[in-house]
Image 1 (cartoon, one colour):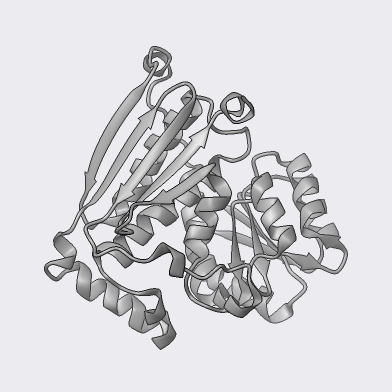
Image 2 (cartoon, helix red, strand yellow):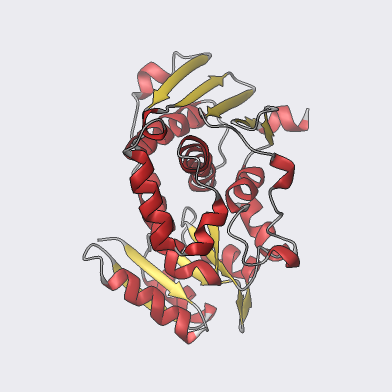
Length: 299
């Protein structure tokens, strides 16, 4: 049973998170209101995910991240932000925090975020002896409109990234989250042609639109092409949908105050935090994610 720790001084949000996970019989949720308390819990035993307020009264986000990782080096940490990701949250994302969730989206996003992170923690092995003989690789997946396949593809790509030493000891989950965002954007906004602005009508309406379009032509018939190329210097992942594309320059920067609460931009922001290079084709229906080895970056 996954152990989920919640450290948040906002009583209403803390209560909401506990209530959300109480509906899931597979989770054990412990909620406290300070950084000191959650660090004591980590001293007592490991957790599977930590959800933490980014501005706790007794500890800042960067210090909490560092102290929590001292106690459990691979612990996935998700920060709850009052607005968009501020400078401190950007810092901890670079250090290896798994993700962030704005408080305005806790009811909608925190449960899905944790479930996806837990799925990424289920590490699978491709076969170490066979991988040891691999000097370069190139793969292409043609994914139907079935998000249940995303996890398998992500695990495969992460295993290759591990093999080519493209991942640090603590950033497997965060890079996996970034790939998830690329796949979800390609499916929902690309192939299903559902704009982020649709969320303004309510998440029930947004979810209903997803279910309707995934069963209807041409939306449900479209595929996502995932191409990957790996070598000892870098890994490149391309995610291409069959939608009309979009104007990347028009995506709002979630770190700017005027974009607080806007329903778009988070996925692209996370991709840019966790990969060394993120670029789109002119149409806007193919994103290329590049991760380089430390030697390549410093060379």
